[in-house]
Length: 305
Image (cartoon, rainbow, N blue to C red):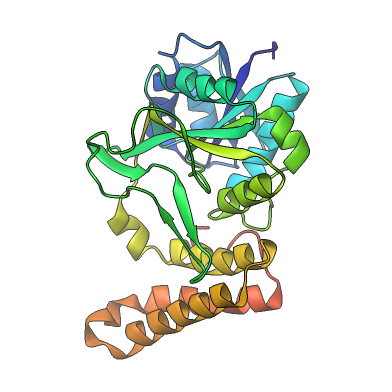
């Protein structure tokens, strides 16, 4: 790999055509110069071969097994460091970028030397003007995180200039490599979900700034309904929420809030007739709590993981 100012790392696991669409959007980027690396987590759908065939300029790094977002991202960051890159853009394989998105993120970091990370406004792919994330907030009193602007139509309410936020979605996040050297890699225990929140908290506590660049645009193939029905998502979100609280040294109020939220959810899915179909999700949440308590992290012990 030749030295490029920005290395784009795309963790991929059975991404299929979505990964190719992601790479297609990157092929339209003219500035800055980028190098693209697809880190494949042992896909069984022929993704790696499809990428090599369709986008021969992209490097494919095959890990051989599923190491989650954290494992693939850390391998990509290590590769970017060896290549001498100044920045690394971590990009979900089911996302597409606007032609000027990377340039705008890079501009945000260039203008603020204290900034360690910049992220775009992320929209739903099937609702191109509806926001999924304009950065994220942390409620330390309830132990909750939320995406800023979620489900809002973008009417310019986030302004035009980069602004500091507590964390960014890992869907698309441009990291300054000097910050990665200082802060360290993503915590592999998370596997997927909450890893970027914990990393951003670590970064801020070491003096870094997290920026949302409103004019940079990315579209994410994600639906709220699919996430709500997935036992796997409920498992990771429950276990990793607790892991985040522990890793970040959250106050007692945050733990109490998380415990109350989890108890209410399980109780509701147990006693309310309209939630009888939530048995698999309830089992996943209970398993997540048990695994956290026993110190079992990494890949979920559930079907489809």
